[in-house]
Image (cartoon, rainbow, N blue to C red; front, side, top):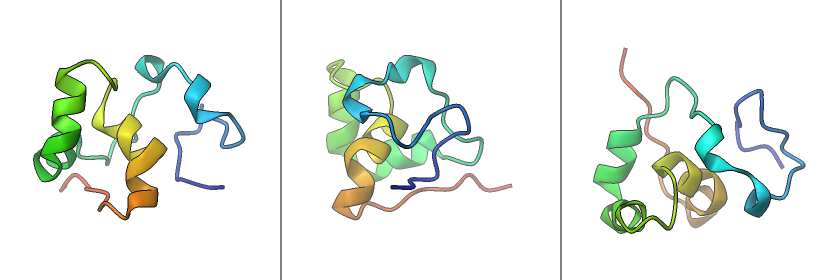
Length: 73
């Protein structure tokens, strides 16, 4: 299973056991863009159910077919 994870995150880990507050998103992941495109995810973040839009994207968003936003150079 390859989700284009940061180098410091082993793709074989159980994603439910990861301390997502210590996993930085890749530099080209547009956190604000992802939250803007997915207001339900922004609500989950606001209520403390997730630590970031990146966490949501890796754990559920990709499988749900949500677009991965890239930062523009």
